[in-house]
Image (cartoon, rainbow, N blue to C red; front, side, top):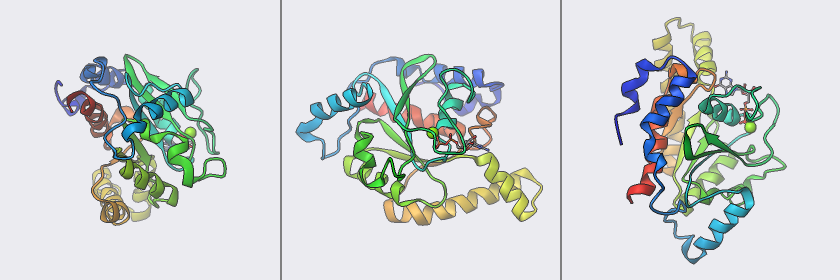
Amino acid sequence: MGHALSTFVGAIGSVKDLMQLMVNMCDAFNKPPNRDGMGGGENIGYNRDRLIKEAQQHMGMDAVNHYNFIFCGPAKGGKSTLINAIRGVKPNDAGAAGVGINEVTQDVHCYDYPGLARVKLYDAPGAGTQSHPAATYFTDKKLYAFDCIFLIYDGSFLESCKQILEEAHAWGKPVAFLRTKADRLLDDVMYNSGIDDEQTAKQHLYVQIQDAFQRKVVAPYGPHQLFLISARQLRLARFDEIAFFEYIRHAAARRQFT
Ligand SMILES: Nc1nc2c(ncn2[C@@H]2O[C@H](COP(=O)(O)OP(=O)(O)O)[C@@H](O)[C@H]2O)c(=O)[nH]1
Ligand SMILES: [Mg+2]
C-alpha cells in the first residue's frame, strides 16, 4: 500500500503536486476490486444483482469495477467545490462541477479522478430540498451502491443528514463526515474570540467542532470520522485534508482485502 500520505505533506507545492501524490500513493486503485461495492448490508440479499443493475442504469455507475464515492448533504455545503478542488479544477474550468451561493447541482453527476481511472467521485444535489426530499434521498440517489458516503456536516446535523445516516447504517454503508469551509470557520473563530495566533485559534476551532459532533452524531449514532477541510485551500493541507485522502484509500482498499 505504500507510505502514509502524511509523510509527503511537506512536498505539496501545488494542486498538481497534491493530485500526483494521490495517484502515487493510491496506485492500489489501478487494480480491480475483488468484489462488488454493494457491501454486506442485510438489506441487499438476493436483490444484489438487481440493485447493481439499477444503479448502473440510473446514473451510469459501475458498482463492480470502479471505486465510487459520493458527496452528499445540505445544499450549499461545499460538495461541488470540494470535488473540483480534489480534481484540481477551478469553478470556471471546462468540466468543473457547477458551484454557487444558490442551490446549483440538480442531478447526481460522476467525475473522474485524473490519473486514477477506477476512482469516481459523485456530486449529489442538496438533501432535504423540495426537489430532493430527505425521506427518499437515500434510495433516490442509490446511495447503497457507493463504497463510501461523504456526508457534509455543517454543524447543525439536519434531519436530512440523520435520515441518510440511519439508512446507511441499515445498509451497512460507511459514512464519513466532512466539515467544509474550514478556512472561513477559522477566520470566524479568530474574529469572534479575538485570538490572533492561528495555531491557538485552530485548537479552539477543533474543540468547538468536535464537541458538537460528539453530542449530535457520535453519542446517538456511534463513532464516525469527521474531517475538517478547506476546499479553497486544499493544497495547503492546513486541516484534515491528508487524513481525508488516507480515508479514501482505506475505504476503497476494503473491497480488495475482504
Ligand atoms: N471559504 C470557502 N468557501 C467555500 C468552500 N467550499 C465551498 N465554498 C463556497 O460555498 C458556496 C457553496 O458551494 P457549493 O460547492 O456550490 O456547495 P454545494 O451546493 O454543496 O455543492 C460557494 O460559493 C463556494 O465558493 C471552502 O472550502 N471555503
Ligand atoms: Mg453542488
